[in-house]
Image (cartoon, rainbow, N blue to C red; front, side):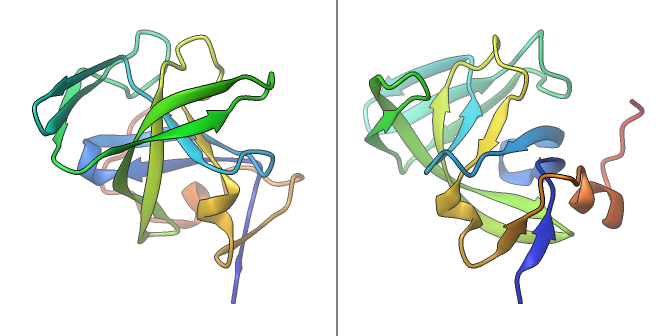
Length: 146
């Protein structure tokens, strides 16, 4: 059975060392995207720095991915952009799910992460009247004061 989720939430990306991250549930986006301040391709690895002065709980976390690929993403303004894509995990309602994330600079956006349809399908129904349903109903090991 699908869980009901609101239009925004607060989730964890344990493999990325990112906790209590504000996300926007975006049914208009096919892929999910995460803010990445620096991307360095070195040989067969991708070194990513997740850092932001704008987005809360984005400290200077550095992750090296052995598996990554590039994909074309059509942005909301209609332009195609080639982005790196990585596999990771995200926690909703205390349950860990696999997720594909495209990497982009989102410092100028309100939310550092967009959760798109590719991830949402067969798991969640979005109720735009609701907010932070997963966050409010889950126990959080990594609690922060807001």
